[in-house]
Image (cartoon, rainbow, N blue to C red):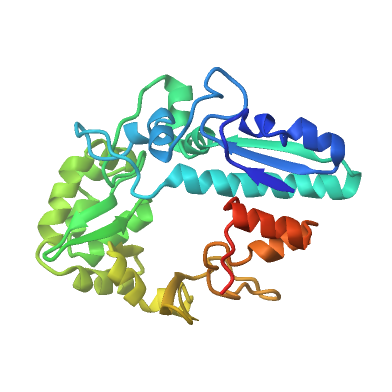
Length: 309
């Protein structure tokens, strides 16, 4: 299989486009990840995550109401396009294994962003309304958002009638259960700003830690809003080995994000450190069939870097 993320047309100009390689190896799974996809009026445009977030609608629904455009805090279309491509490659590989027929897997940052607009696209398809940003609030449920405490914020998920009543009892505001303004889920969503202000009057009297403990005892789902140092100090994150240390002969101990999917029979592991620039050039070129003199010529001309120590 082959994976590339040039603009459409670049691989063809290099003589290694899908059609050229498919004729040499019909079972080839060829994956192309671009800014806007391999077809359509924008296929020749370059693309970055920021551009895709704006074009896909993500920036129109991120941030706070009446605020400026806000992008998601991580390069979400870069990451998700890679995940979608991996899924597509696996599907194509299974097909190739059973039929001998390869195919082109084509996805883009733009499509990856659109794929995340599940609530928003469905709402637009249903009634034509244009959704906007909600801060930390939910598209259809309330209270389901971050609320201020005495020392920060806490995330509260009380989307159902049962969890709403649990929340009211846990924080000592049972009277809200019978309050006509908030009787039904739709009532609470319609008055979510008013409701959040009422709840914050209570939550702001104690710390986030106090409320997390209180709500956990009550069987509620709640959580902190961690910065990166808090993330890696969290005992659950540590128990799941989401921070791994690896010794490097040149740089000492290096920290890595752990493996987020745990396989019981074939668990993943970090087998070695990241290579230095050009460290494996000789191995790769040798495995690809280049002779010693050819490789030496590539090194001498500067076309390829020899990074062997």
